[in-house]
Length: 427
Length: 170
Image (tube, rainbow over all chains, first blue to last red; front, side, top):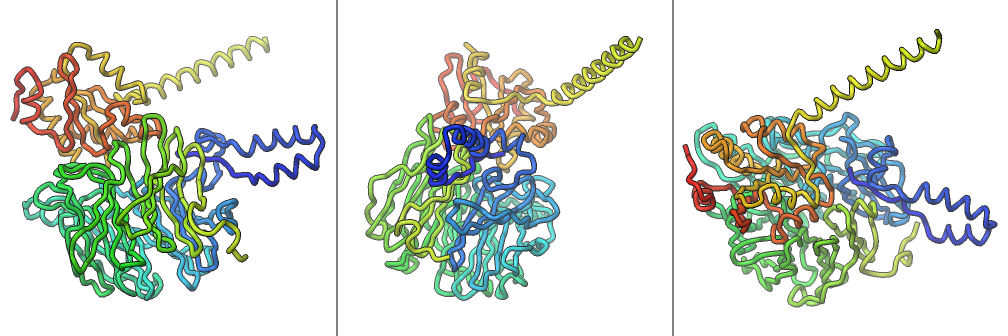
């Protein structure tokens, strides 16, 4: 559905020009044209059978400990994994994760996730849309042979109900505990059976303590979550995690809650993380982002709201000790702004998001060098006048990369913070 | 003779292809959906010039939208002439799936549109620069096309307040 452009190294073009006659250059120019400009439409029609992140949708990416970039994306009911040893200049042939096609969700709030552990095991999760409506299953697969093959996908939700299990997130702690969290409607179903009202859905999770070989039972975190927003995860100590999600407070107020989850199924330190007073009986399709501060250990949060108190994209820092958000800051109040994503590198906090000015979508960036107390003026990293995905940030030990898919540019993976590209990478 | 036979066969082929095309076009017209592009909103407004109407935005991926569609389906049974235009924010390629939902709520006869451009920000902007994309979303236009908007499930109170004529409710 979404298109792309094949990248071509500029240096090769220069080499060609210097070493071939004008005629040869003309011939190569034609060849070049035929391989560079693959539009969204061409991905849809003439390039049938072409599997690539440019022609696929909703990629997620991560680096392994050796600096190899891994990414996963969805194309034609398959989840694929590919890798790159040159920071996205070129990619390996894609390996299919689910051999049997299934309706893997691929929209801004729903995308496959990928993690590579220290032993080079590759873990992938996604949400499979099932029938009937709003139903889904949380799917998981792993590769234990360095990405050559993937195990038959497993379903992580253990209720065996045809109901909503969607918006999964995946996180691996320092201790090696792998958490899967998701939005779950089993409690809604149970209440309907009893003839009782139940607002929204619930948040559930499961943990693997053996590199994805097995998972724990499902644990409930909270009732009455919003049913259509992704969940943000950050570490809380070596083995626990903190999660941030949109929760229904009272009858219709859809603000954010935060809690700590443990590997053995305990939910602790639950608190309210945002006070926007967004009273809405609707689907925002707009989940938050969260990273832990390297300075204070507190939690940087960014989210979207259209409440009575706040409207637009916001930032705040949450302290579990104080149990309250601090330094609440309006990042962008303009309509059309959304989907913030946070990352920290070298004691600087970075926040990207997507805005729309009436003509173009822009990926904007602001920075804070004082733990979110004050912010730089915004700069535009990229823009497009066609359809595009949400912007994501991928961390590496020497900097941060923008991961962004658009119809116009294909898959963009480029460094925007940290040491200059190429100085620190060792093959 | 040979030429004539070839001609006949070609004509037959033409006829068969034409018949197939007709069949396909009938299948393609099995729903009411029109492609919503950046100009469609103005087109809808023009078609209701001087008249009030309600625009309802929805998606199959929005549980509250289904509550609203059910409510509107019942309301339209009692008020069949209610000027109501549906716009789905799902891509028009998924029309069959969306059609199933409208069938359930008796809304297949309504004027219906589906987003037909992956640049959804532009489509949203063409309707309302102040809409953030949350669903369901309703817009009411009075006779002079003064606009009123609402996010979340539409209520009986709002509709009574918006429409100049009194509506029948269950």
